[in-house]
Length: 99
Length: 498
Image (cartoon, rainbow over all chains, first blue to last red; front, side, top):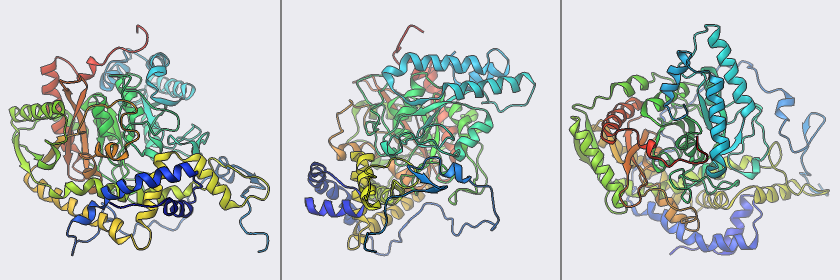
């Protein structure tokens, strides 16, 4: 039986940028073993020499001519912004005080 | 009037027996009447719908040549962007967002003159099989309001089966059109991957997602399929080729001499008795119409569910990274001095529901170094084996068939604390998505033990979508003759006395 500790889940949550409550971390850790066992069945098959499929369509390198096409105005692009300033997205502080 | 098929409504509109305005108003009245108990819609755009209806009526009276479906109302799954209309994908993280653009599907619907009544409920970001994962509460199955309509396109399926709309658009990543269609006694099609543009379809798992049509008859579904399919330069995975005539196929309904392959792995053990019985009966009907039934072996399908629940979460963990609280959607914790990262962490915690978090974490794990080859890499190879199984099976049969879902509609709450039991409901639909081919679910009758609808699934090779409609309409025609009407006519009356 696979398992993942509360701390393992906390690490994954941090990587995925989700601040989870203690209760959620514990719950997820308790379910994770069961889910991993279910998906680990992919390892039961002999896959030597089998090529991986990332995508069902045999399409590669789709290009278009490099010409300017109509696009959203800055007003439209900013229409859903949580905060804006001077026609730009206003975001919280990205760099630390010392930098 | 609202109980007619879309094809019948289209005829009445063309003959001037009814206006789009009155047809649209009748559906808005029906929504007001029954949606408080069905809860199919997240947003009803009465104003926009009536404006479009009026516009179509004016064009028709001016003698303009219109698309056959012009003026017909439709319900749109909330996963598709519609300009100026709230679009949430069933998530709190997009609450109140009004897209500044139309998805290509919406552009095509508008161009054909369809009337969009509103946005339908869904499992958050299409992750689920019951619509219970919506941040805005569940949708209820019109056949039994204590049960789920399936999912993730449960709102769209419930809207069509409760006569709130004759047509709807859903999306299908692992069965999210076919399974709710099965559980609500209607028709749903997942077109070939790349046949319908994904531009403006909020992404869950990009290599599996596909929007498609939902209707009460095979012909209605074909007519809607025809509107939304086609090459789109805005979607790099869009197929640029010849599209089959699905409407002609839905009208032909001839299966004489066709070979129909029953997939050994998708029946029997694990399938409810009444589901298996209706499936077997439909096979006999097809045989009596002159089709030849053969059994095909797809041994790798046993691992399809495991492969899906690695590939889809992996792709979603990447796709949902865009919800970062910076450019649109929810922002939480933006106080003085808070860092962008802490705002991001708090927003994603507050904005995503449990199932979405579960899949993002699983995907993050499956893609992390040290585990990548064992999980994601193996799943991608299983995908190749499934494609090979289908290729061999389609060498022996024109279409393949199975029950759509192993059970009829389950009770609200029955599986919500057991993710594995919930995932098992997708066992028969998932192989289609992994291979990028097309599939249909249509009603096969009611299960004896619970009197709930059973779905019959038809699968065809990529870009052979017309075969679904040809076989589907043949089966539908024979079953409707046998039943003395469409299965949906047996759905309980809801709401007022209309």
